Length: 183
Length: 183
DNA sequence: CGCAGAAACGGGGCGGCCCCCCGTTTGTCG
DNA sequence: CGACAAACGGGGGGCCGCCCCGTTTCTGCG
Image (cartoon, rainbow over all chains, first blue to last red; front, side, top):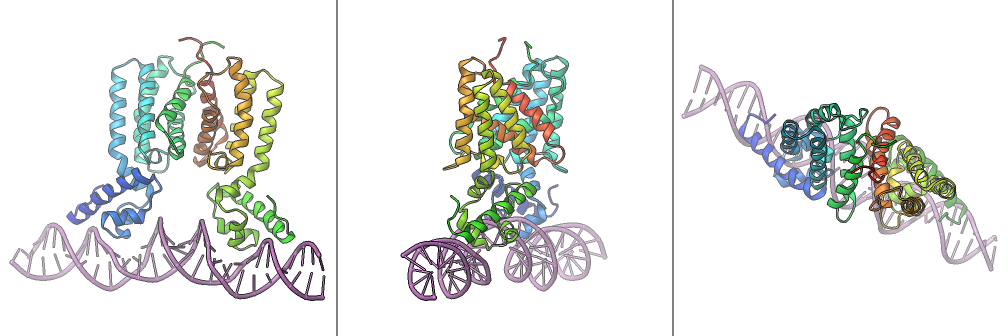
């Protein structure tokens, strides 16, 4: 993953740092040329290390996705299956909505390591919740991730306050995944 | 809105037709130059008639948005308030998810006529549903529209079948807007 | 230590896009 | 039918992503 040669490794790290700042500042569609400029390298170097925008996004957010997966794993071991899933989904949504660009690295696409990681972590929680009848059987982990990323991206592009709106919308959607109590 | 001079009106209509086809084919971020090319006009003519991509989107989808508003109005007069809202939201979601680009013309922005139209139409249904205690009081029409457009846009970018996934996700989210029956 | 080959670099070109200027054409109305 | 306003569109500027390929830099071996 990370290059062998010292100069390449240095450029790689500077690109990651510049990209992280740019994505936080301007969102997932920040200019790649500008990122290369900020990193002090030519644009060709950026494209050699990261053949696509998606690859750069994934590299930037890989660590944070890993942390979210770790959190899922801990919740799966401890709490009740039902609350564990909703707690994680809310935490995931809040974090994704407050981290510009992160949602874009969770969309399903070919060889998207971040997406696969989150799916595997979330599926563990979902499977347990389903076994405890805490969630509707037809709900899939892809459904849940799509909801979280869709809401996050929608709120990300909206002008004013984003955190509270994302929380409210996610709350509605998450309540909808429970089995309906009455008829 | 529509130009006075005959040649301008002809170009306007050809641009709308070309844009409608392009948006359906490639989504809301289709190339404006290509649309002008397909319409047989210079790109300057496109920009004179439609100063922004949003303006073109709105013009293309204005009629369909009007039809959706009309449908809301009819539902508001007839059925029970609670079901009327959910029926309309499901119909709206199904239609938006199956019409590439339409979701982009519903996002809130300055002077977005389509957005205002939908908001006013939906608010009528929501107000009645709220008065009948069929919906949580804190839910706003902006929340609902954001959910519908967010899910539609997410599904729009996904590869395979979109209709069924949009329907399932919307079903979950819409169920979440009802007052919670138990605790 | 030094060198040869491999690995990495980046300037710069290509094509595309959006946006707009401004000289030219065309419709309209008296 | 003529003049004037309205509309047109070629083309240029700026930015972008992408990639070729001549040049530089690192590294491991003799």
